[in-house]
Amino acid sequence: MITRSIHILPWVVALALAVACLSLYAKLHQSRDALRLCEMESRDLREQLDVANLAPLLSIQREIQPRLSEFELRRLQRKGLSNPVYDLIQNLASRSDLIPAEAFFGGSMHIITGETYVLTDRWVLAGFEDGHVRGNLWLEYDVDQAGRISWRVLGWYMN
Image (cartoon, rainbow, N blue to C red; front, side):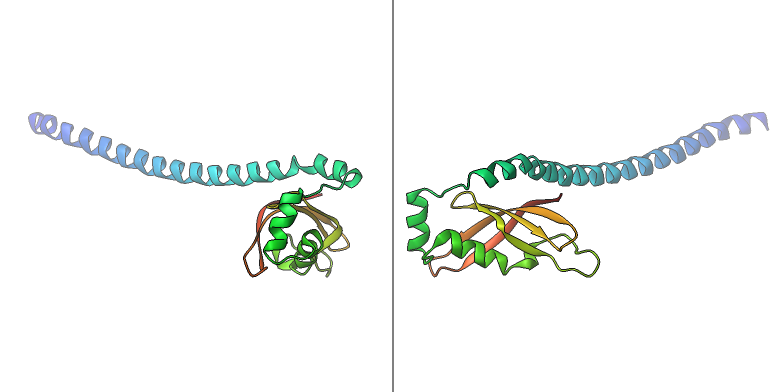
């Protein structure tokens, strides 16, 4: 009987080790999933931080409105925008769907044209609000040969 117990003992130990390995394997997968989630959240937070670091730029631009170079203006005019800065700001003002923030207290988010700056022939920094809360968008735009403007939100933050 003792010899039989001795022969079974390695199998019991092997089974216990297998169960422990499976448990550790499951925990490893849970940890990997949690790590992936943290990496995604970290990426989102880094993007928000990059945009938030543009906040000092807003106060400077209130004093000095950026200007597109003559080359940039002509390029946009050739694409069909007669007054590029005005046309871009007016087009953006009609696109409240680009604002990712939710309005508060029944308001509706809209672009603040007086706080919208065409930085280059590719980027715009725009203020938005709903009457209760404010924020800023960093956008990339493209103008096709027919003068149609397409927008892409690169980042945003709430003030």
